[in-house]
Image 1 (cartoon, rainbow, N blue to C red):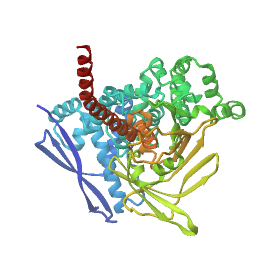
Image 2: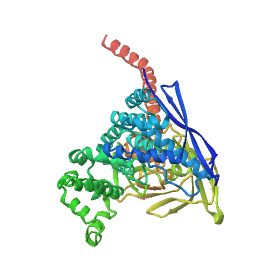
Image 3: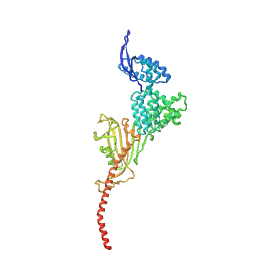
Image 4: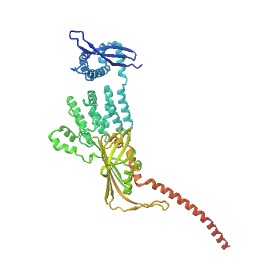
Length: 533
């Protein structure tokens, strides 16, 4: 039989003290339900909560128990805002304290609950999994069982877990850390996993950070080395994770010094002397003058390559300050006008831009033109408005979309910032090609050239998530979009259809020709036979 304990502060009441000064004070109504049926109600003042907190301080220290921060005394204690905030904090403090059997006796007296019944329920409560802990279990199962979409799973967990205060026992923090640590060392999602870990051990982002620190140190240097903090610190994995790695190393170094472990940090850094030197001299004049320019330079290491199935095409991306940049280079056999068409004509663009649901052109002052884009990603609408420009020369054509915030068409959508450019260049030493179209196809013969398209896009942090999970998880969505772009540009579908039509026509023509030639062959055979006779 499952037992449960429920402690809630169900109300607050203003009382007047019976004394000469007749001062007002606040009483909190506490309702305790054991096993879903036995209910106990008491009224307690703040000073009684404070006395209980003082009483259990020694027990907390002896058993290394961490409770939520106890609300401090406030001068304006009778204001509605103070009472409401204090009520929420005291309720959370009581609920967390009820999960520790060491606090059984003082809590049972404070709540006026029989000790024997409270003990049974408290023991069984520790064997059950709370909703907050179940969130960790589900996340751990999802990430370890699936090799794809892990970046999206990390994003969803981060949003859910840090959206409110969570009550989690140490063993579930250990489960979470055992999953996060190996993910920190991965090339594509390591930065996101490291970001979540940094928040968990930060007092500014997570109230129960001490518990996480305790479990983190227990894992030991060998297991912690899987985070590859040396590569993060030296920017061999991802540029944004350098400061995150330093924050985690600082916490670990403090604990290693307390434990008098002189080699723990070396093991965590995989015996990387260069990384150890950078950590030791972090913030010093020597580091700023010598090491940091080398580490912080924005070079080719920032760009990540996405594996692409298309021949003669490459896709690169990088994430800096939560802003996403994508660069794609494709060699095509098509016309310049065809490329401009599939980029700027809504019906053509929808053939390859998978997340695009609406696109329209609007006029701007001074003869300029603008484009309105509406995207849909995970039931969220993103609106992008851009100024359109095109520059054409004998050697290249440049199509640009520059963000403008002067127009809003969809108030329910998130207004994002995206800037894109499409540079179309004629490849050197390329000769014009002629389409080998059948004469039966009534279509003018077009000149097809060998062109190089360099496509660059820059997304702000609000709309970068539309494509980031596709790139980091290396799913087929973005690659499929590029494939559809190439198919639309080179009109491969039309070529295939024409080939099929021409093949069928040729087969029919051969069959008809065979029928026409058959009687003639028989006539010649009869004539030759008569001559022999």
